[in-house]
Length: 130
Image (cartoon, rainbow, N blue to C red):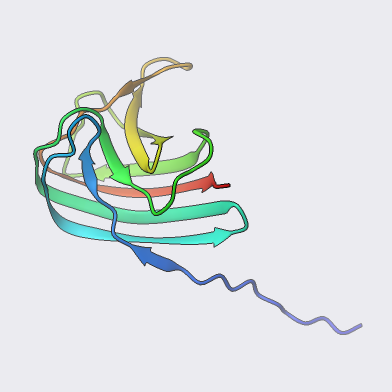
């Protein structure tokens, strides 16, 4: 029996994530905007970093995605640097073509995280599209 390696090679696509507010996007002065994503069938995996020194948006803090998920159930992670969100360490929830940052309040509920004026976020998320 001959065994050949057949690594799955999936090309990554670069995209530019944007940090903004959900109520009013405002203007964000980004210092880092880097992101990549891959798609395997309906599964999309996205990762990146956004850093900003000034954000005037209002409402829930959010990061743009390269495509719109079909469900709000997501697998994701966000790490912060140089920022402390008022509602605590954020989690990820997809809303339309954005990842909104939310803070857990109980084991069954979350609280929206408001836009911070400056900070640095690293994120990774997987979701399904139609």
